[in-house]
Every structure is written in C-alpha cells, then in structure tokens.
Image (cartoon, rainbow, N blue to C red; front, side):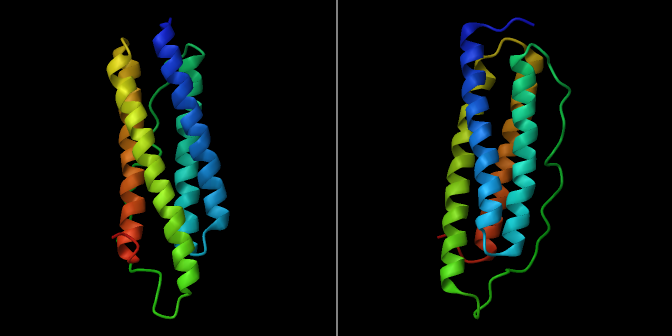
Length: 152
C-alpha cells in the first residue's frame, strides 16, 4: 500500500493525537481521586494504545485487521460521589473529566477529516471504527460526569 503525502501527513497528526491520549489517560488514571474514574481512565488508555498501534501499522504500509477495544457497554452505576465526599477531590476529578472530554472531541474531529481524505476504503473503514470508539470514550466520560453532578 502506498500512501499519498497528504495521507501520510494526516496519519502523523493522528499518531500524535493518540500518543497524547495514551499519556493523558495514564496520567489521569494515577491522578484521579475516585476509583471508578481511575478504572475508566485506565480502560480508555488501553484502547487509545490500540489506536496508536493501528495508526503505526498503517504508516508502515500494513492495513491491520480491526480490533474492537471498546465494544463493552458501560454499566449504569450509581454516582460514586456522596455528600460526604471531598468537594476538592470532586472538583479535581471534574477538571480531569472536562479536559479528557475536550480531548476526545478534538481527536474525533481529526479522524473525521481523515475519513474523507483517504482513498483506500479499508483504511477509511478502520479510521471510521476508531472515530466511533473515540465517540464512545466521550460518551463514557460524559456519563460519569452526569452521574456525579459534574456536567452543567
């Protein structure tokens, strides 16, 4: 498979974004105060690593088989923050969630552009699949925020 200069440039952007996501989720998993949020960030970081691996494979000329790292549905759980929870901890976790949600919105838009620019339908399908997973990440973060009174 031979990539155009534009496709190569878009893949570099995607790779950089995925690297940022992996680093953020790993850091946020250690920084989060709530155990449920730590687990969510860990899970999302693992899926972002799969995305990074996929983009790296495409850049090297391989069209990888699609992996579904995010097919699990998030369970509807009760809010983890209670009236006795530290407002400072909740505020800190809220900041992490807001930043992660903003990142997911941006990354999804990067994939949106790429989907329209690639000539190979198999690569477009892979990018579309990754974009859907990015959107699912945003939904999971939103759900956590909504359950915990963090989303205005």
